[in-house]
Each structure stands twice: as structure tokens, then as C-alpha cells.
Amino acid sequence: MRRTVYVLNGPNLNLLGRRQPEIYGAKTLADVEAECRQAAEAAGLEIVFRQSNAEADLIGWIHEARDEAAAIVINPAAYTHTSVAILDALQAFDGPVIEVHISNVHRREAFRHQSYVSLRADAVIAGLGTAGYRMALRYLGEHALPSS
Ligand code: DQA
Image (cartoon, rainbow, N blue to C red):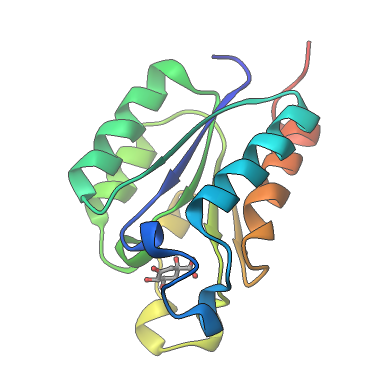
């Protein structure tokens, strides 16, 4: 638990690699998971990596993380811009929260500039492609979660 990080992914991210590759790149979610596992191992972290298209699943996993995880890395996908419920669930989590977006949401449509999740996130990474997940894990390993 002390060095376990929940890496949570929202709707449509199961289609990574096939979905708008000009925006989200060619890597699949399985590729991203493999890269996160490598980065976590290098950082001395355990990860639980999950994706759902359902808001209720994401909320349930955030609740679970209260007991099971020291930190959360979350790409809430479209729920970023709409979900007060995910914000509220994250407000009930005590550890560090890093919000990740593959694309630079600020260079896109105006509705993507608003993030409810950013009201809780300790850090936001956007526009680094899928490398953003690895950066988040590396940061957590080096700065946020003490190793002893
Ligand atoms: C996203 C950006 C969101 O605006 C979009 O709805 C997504 C993915 C990203 O990773 O760039 O599904 O979170």
C-alpha cells in the first residue's frame, strides 16, 4: 500500500492506438501499461493499472484506492471536463494525485480547457504523449513517496 499507485484510465482509452492516432499516437493501452510497469519497477513502485468507459467504475476504484494506494495517476479522458463526481471522489483520497493527458488539451477545443480534476490534482501533465504516465510515476517514486 505504501508504494502502490493506482493508474486509472477513463473512457475511450481502451481504443488507444486505433483512436485518432494523429492526436493520441500509435501506442495501445497495453503498450502504455507495459511502459508503466517498467517505469514503476525502476521507481520501486507497485502499480494497479485499470481502464473503464464507465464513470461509476472509476469512482469505485478511487474509493478502493483510499485503502489500497499511496497515490493516484489518472487520465480521466472526457470525464475530466464533465465529472464533479470524479472530483469529489478524488477529494476523499488523501495521497498525491497526478492528472495525465496524452494530448495538450489546452491547444484543443475550448471545452477541453476546463478540468474539474485539476481542482484536486497536485500536478497535471498534458501533451507529452503516453510518456506523461512514465513521467508521473518517476516523479512519484523520486519525490512524493518516500522509499523507506
Ligand atoms: C485526453 C484528453 C481528453 O480531452 C479526451 O476526452 C480524452 C483523452 C488525453 O489523454 O489527451 O479522451 O484525456
